[in-house]
Length: 596
View 1 (cartoon, rainbow, N blue to C red):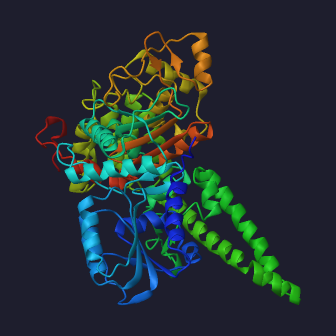
View 2 (view 1 turned 180 degrees about the vertical axis):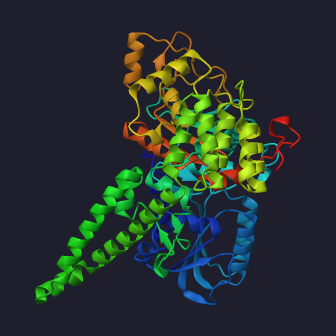
């Protein structure tokens, strides 16, 4: 089986580009998007070691003449990039050009490049399929912050970009066949699945996956609207907390708003490939992080003491040899102590522990009157941010949408009496049910609608939870567990171009159970109960680091899953995504609330 590691897949292509250019001194020419793709998997210092000494953007004017350098052009095949490349080749400043596109390039564009290459500087034109941003080994994004448009329809340009990203992902992971399944209730998921299937068949003669193959792959396309709960919740694992409370963009964290921050720490890089502490604590909870940062400090203090004892030539030599590692450790300690300190400050001043416990109980428990009273108390609490009250009201609206004593309207009215909510937040509350209410959803998001779901929730309740702040299980985990058991219903998640491809019967014999445990397809009289060996997930409308954590845990238990989406959301970006889909008329009686 191929290695399902998107970071390694992207690094493989970058290494190939550098190697193909030979031993000469090189410059790397990128566009805005490929610059992000490269920076996520390679540190600049590491690329410098490979004789790449210049980094330029194709869309930004650079130096005039660099004939002694070889240009490695790594570009998306967009119209703007093709035109910029043509202009570059008409007046070449590099001695030679090795050109690599992240996706399929049209023959007309190849012709335009050839005609512009009058000086015959172009040595190579190839397609290297790294048209996505690799974040963690199992996690990728297309860096599209807004997918939805009014009435939740595809924009043609975004649909094309999304299909291209998924094509490149499959090719970079060496997939030659796959079964494409999609969420039936989402028109956007269906259109994307069909576009992806048609593109693969037309341009690659890509085949539907052979269910008997040992590496049977399923591509599962779902819509963020199916689970609007997860992006609304506060988070308590390290990576997720940093993104939720501070923000992570292309592995960079802006700390300029931290009180008393030093100049060198105003922006820091958090990349698990080059930061051992971060890699070890990506999924640690807040309590564990505090303990681990203390150990890191103690380790640094011991190193510092040993470095300060320089009494001989041997000590000096040892100091010089270990100084780079010591300096790196010093930077790591400063960075993480600052970040953890800021997280701790925010948790305290915004009363996030009490707030998060209420969020989790609201979503996972069912005591309606108690929850309403708790929300009302928090509304009156000056320490609670407006955005966190908005989270609670939206969670309540989704959880108790059809409850006989629904008090969403009353809670919003109560909020507006004592808080000056921004118009944006009011519109968000008005939009949330239109976005992810029961009218759109096909899943039982709160495990309240059928006996199987209620039983599953009851069993989880009996087992208890180790952490009251981690009661919630994202829907995507439930869907993937069903898929891995062969129980994801085909009428809810059909395959492209195939009816009844997947057997939805939930009962099978002892021999069939053995086949399932051994990872073999379970054979029926008339069909196959397909158990995929590999799953590639794409979420239209974005994903969260909480979902990434759960996929990581499933992979640790032996699953082979890659998760991705249009964007990695925190609450702030999710608000913008929801509002892009449109806000219903405020004349709706359910939300007819005026400021008093």
